[in-house]
Image (tube, rainbow, N blue to C red; front, side):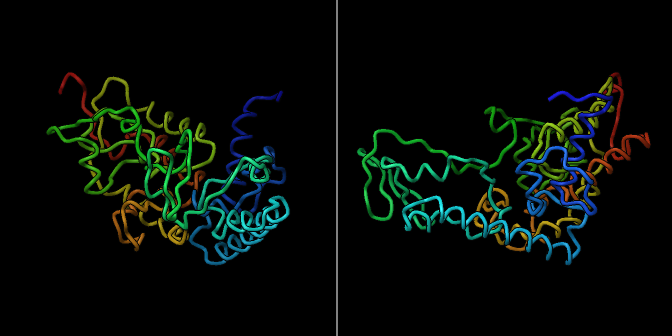
Length: 309
């Protein structure tokens, strides 16, 4: 793609954000015009400026219902085996799982060498020396590729590292008691540590945009100082005030979107809510941290010269 003029990429990204977060009114032109911008109901997962408005939620549910019905019709007309098609149909809101943008996925199940095994939500019971055991039946296999199911973690977890702060406390130990941060990128007791969310930050399918905004925010604070939040609760309280906008996620099938491993039913009153994102959407989050950045003073940070530490 070739585009002229200064700031065209920023304009394109913010246009994408508007459609993805289901803003009202939407821009006159959808500059990206892809599967994501056509799926405004996904704003239930990532937040929207109108997320707490009951009329908005009703509209989003209506949009999603029509989209999911269209997907189920496509499954029915594409997959030739009725039993397989019946299992493949999604009977949950579209924001509950990562969407699949593929022209070839469904037709794969029409191949003679492809079979779909429905475990009725129970998963694989046993791996045997011949294959796998599911629903009381053994399936002979030459190789097993585990392609779904994982716990969402930070970069330290994926790098097999332990992040240790003051008083020899690890980041994992601290967050077991509940998540508290400033802007979702810093936490007290861990000076000079900046992490890229995703909890308590804005969320988006375009993660590059989110990381760029977080980097801009971190960049104004790092040079020549020892830096950590001076309090634990204010930013978390702001996040919790907006968490109700995301409550429809609780009705989804289990997954890391609704933090199933925390086993909490009441999102607003539980520790799970502290691990939510900014419920008003990415535009509101960027405005919030941008206002903090440009007012100066770095409110909420304990900043010391390195010569004093």
